[in-house]
Amino acid sequence: MRQLLAMTAVITLVAGCSATPAKQAAAPTPPASTTASTAALTDANSATGKVDGVTVRASMPDGAAPSGEKLSVAASSTEIPAAKAQVDGVKTVRVRLGDSGAQPTKPITLTFDLSGKPELAAKFSDTVIPVVESVSEDGDAADLVRATWDPAGRTVTATTTHLSDFRLGAIDLGKVADGFAAAYRYIRGDSTSSCRASSEVKIKDTTYTLTATTPGPVAGCLTNAGGAVAVDFTNATQQFYAVTSTPKGAWTSTVRPDLSNLAARLASALGNAKISDLLTGRGTGRLTFGPGTTRATINLRADPAALQAATIITGLEMLTGMRAVGGVVKAAPAILDSGTDLSTVSTCLGQALDFADAKPGQKVTPDEFRRAMSTSSGCASAAIEAGAKNSIVKQAYSTLGTVFAITGDLPSQLAATVTGAIGEVVGDNSLDFALTSSAPSTSVKPSAEGPTTIDRVQVDTWAYDKVGPDTYTIPRGGPATVYFQWKAFSGSAETRGDCESTITVTGGGTTKTKITSNCGSYNPGTYFELRNRGTYTATITIVQKGGGTTTATKTVTLQ
Image 1: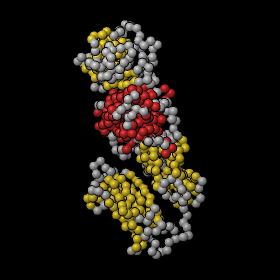
Image 2: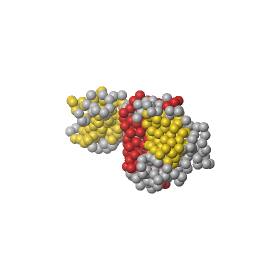
Image 3: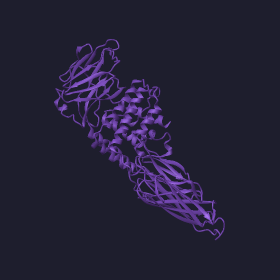
Image 4: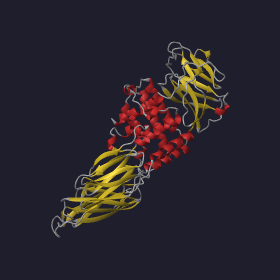
């Protein structure tokens, strides 16, 4: 269901954007002027017209016209808003088959001769590329077509299977890269809350403390929720975080984002079918623990939704003139009836754009970014080939595919601008909090001796690539998954009574804590993913029912 909603949102976005921007003239074909001449047929399978100083030629192979209709090329009064990254362009040209607007059965080639437009021809380079945008006369269908620039012949060539109104534009890839970088940085944020690093609350005779492993963009403030301890989280970013805890707490969203915003609306659909299960972008939520909870670990894991939304929306804005009216996109029922395998395509898209799955400190390389964009383009092509028969849906997928394909071809220096911004975001993709408590000592104490009193803890470690006692090699690409195994003993007998064990691993620039409801943790043990080389110290604290506490330590070296 999540994947279905994800791709539905994507296609709806494109189709919705495509359906609205064009401003149509009252007459289907405007009169000729000094900058536009009506079509002049050159042979049975081609037509030529001059628009805005540019000679435009449309040509088709034999058999492309369904009933022998002739091609025509003329000026159009349709206005296609300029994309944000466009630096120049020409006026719109109308290409038609016959008087009824028939569509070809084979691809049509459009050639724009810029010999009479030297100022536009001079703009094309390695970082300024041509694109051709189209929109139907009724505005219901739109597309973006990649074009080819021939500097020797001063011509731009594009191929299309859907005749429409077309506009040639020059897109600055530097502006595209800057747009993506700005979009990713906008997702970031940093909390200014007084609870950013730690928080404390006293409930009856127990004092609870919540500590952030690395203070960052989400603050957690402890509160008394009817005698139970709860954490009120406030998200200062546009990221969407999945909240998990040990032991499990009850999660409720208290403030949701404004979903009239297109980015938030798309991110919520891409992220999860149930937005209430997430700490949403710029949102708040409460995690409430059950009675008697004294210790807990909490993890906030970024969902890739915000990055996906930023990628899709920014690509459309930077590379096309498409806009959504009022920021709200309406559903297009034809999408679900297109026969396309939406689940497969959306899974592919989600995997390609899942930069948020990178571990903290892990950089996304330009090659990885470009591969992700190229893979996403392939997802869109697969959707068309899978059987999207509705023309609006087909062109929506085609537009999305072209956006990703162009972005996937960003030169290395421009892709590095984008990946640098992505690296700033994924550094905050996993946030950890530890809940501890203290209470006055009770009169119940374990006996000094006896079969249930822990007097010894045996601690072992295990991981792949062992090179010595408690010494392991971090695998290529990391991290090393290190298991800590411990048993508690009273004399020679293993103690298995009522206990709660807390293990904290410190080293390599990080501190991580986990809690288990046992005196020991064995087969396989309790694991931690450790990425950096260095020495780590694990401190295990075992609290027995009745107040007895035993501590043990173990040192691990990662090379």
